[in-house]
Length: 43
Image (cartoon, rainbow, N blue to C red; front, top):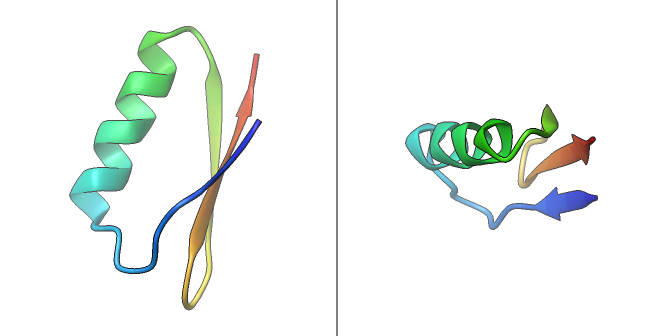
């Protein structure tokens, strides 16, 4: 699954999302761009 984050998503928001993904037993892979970030979810 690929999650596309909104522009301006804070680092705190990203960390909270990563924590939730890990809590569900999945592995997140973060890719940060200049305007948007995406999280690939494997598992």
